[in-house]
Image (cartoon, rainbow, N blue to C red; front, side):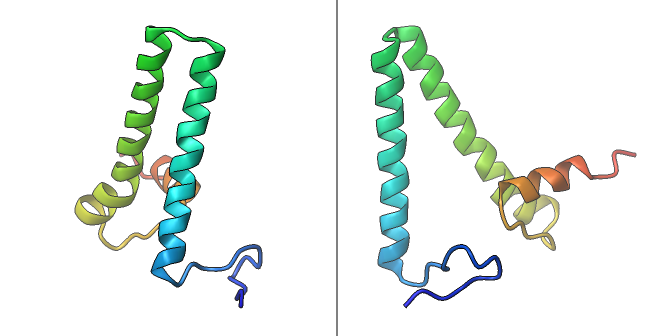
Length: 94
């Protein structure tokens, strides 16, 4: 049975198999998207740039959800990437 979350749009994942399935589907989407980009414009430069985008996106995500929460401000928790970016943009720079 699907339970409504606070947004009412999606259910929270409760079971480990659901989380693994979700991760696997994200990986499949990543691989299919990369493959479609590379068959559209095949070149070593595009392959390298695509790998760089994937790697830096993962590192930025790690920064947002691990580094900030573990080392910079342990009291903060983000609901998603946009909340983390709003937090960074709203910080007092002085």
